[in-house]
Image (tube, rainbow, N blue to C red; front, side, top):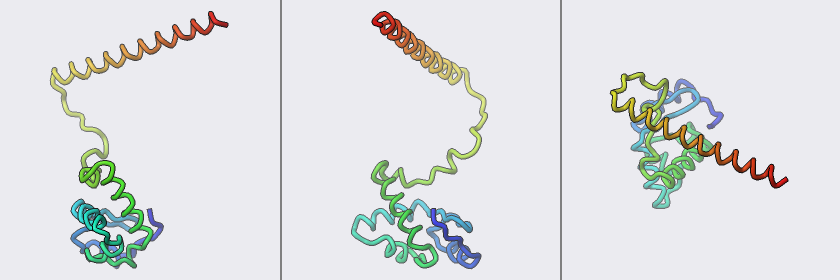
Length: 139
């Protein structure tokens, strides 16, 4: 993350850009659409600062470090997970998990999975114990 702190004027300017989801003094969240556009244009050979400028961003306000790190992060995410890697998933899994009531089938499946995990752990412990015994006999 960049050390640059946005002024109130810069925050207002960035907030007016349609490719900005939110902005604070320390950070900026871009829309998924902008990230997809960025990766597509970068693959055609455009430089990161050119892409930001062509989408209405003031490169001086953002700073080269922020542009460089966002570019690197998005290209890696795209390389590893495709378009899905560019999605902002923070809204979907942030905070405390919901405490919804589980159906009997869901409870049963959870218990079954937990039981299988415990069985596998027991088998592993048995194998380790057998290996320890074998090594003790060897010595």
